[in-house]
Length: 394
Image 1 (spheres, helix red, strand yellow):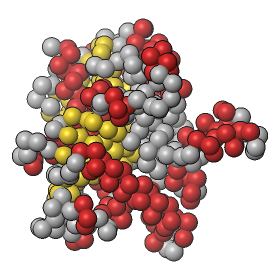
Image 2 (tube, rainbow, N blue to C red):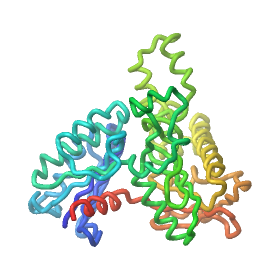
Image 3 (cartoon, rainbow, N blue to C red):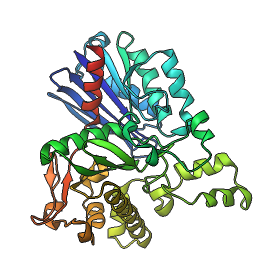
């Protein structure tokens, strides 16, 4: 069974075409830096490889280019769209409605659309992927895998907010959590690798969007993102944790509208707001040249991660391992070094030489005597989405 997986992030689209259940990858690729002048598209099959800098102003254009590559007469891997039996979509926010993988119909699409305001950088891109895929692959079953599903095990003391209970009972306002497909995938890999029956692991997903999860015995018990994907860590253009009094000050004293504040916190803050750059590779390059604003942003980013490591270690009453994953987590030597420095109290002791390794598989980067294991585990949300989509199709 051929299953195409589309994973639309806030500034990128990952895609893989699988032959299931063997999990054989027929082709894979990435569209990145969407909306920037130097957007790139990558495509790789067993016989062809394409890497191009192209104009990709939005997700719709990016998705159309991906489909054209798959169907290209010379370099493509499909002769007809009818070869695809299912398209698995990553959908960030499932709200209180969706806790399991589901076949997409009009009702599901309407509910995903209704959650745009809670994940404005993601759900619209996810929805666009569904619409384009339906047009391009009309015979395929469209399937949604929700980021929020893995976090359904978070206990009430962690997911409920200290506001009047009616807002929880009537409006379902609570912590939902995100990047669940990634956290589930790497935590399962970590548990199997460590061979620990009762495990206490913190997974650190760092990309343009960032999040951390406390995972005890394989189950999510706390998470840094909340009702929407804005809180917690400092992200590419999102602020992460912020004193809500600042919002009232912006509105009441500085004259900002609520829409302007929302845009400020979602699209103009984070590393972009601190440095003028949203891509960490650019920020690290500038910091290495002596740019003090960029260096401060890196330090702030790492400090926020350290705070969450400490709080989650306390919540689990211990810590066996921390796992770095996703684009930044897997590739940024600088961030990993900053995060793990001066953390010996929690048994975190980084090996500087091992940290320089470009990991393509599970890699240990701690010293031999480190009490807490430090692992790089490349995430593969697409495999997880394909597996869940296949299970639903069986």
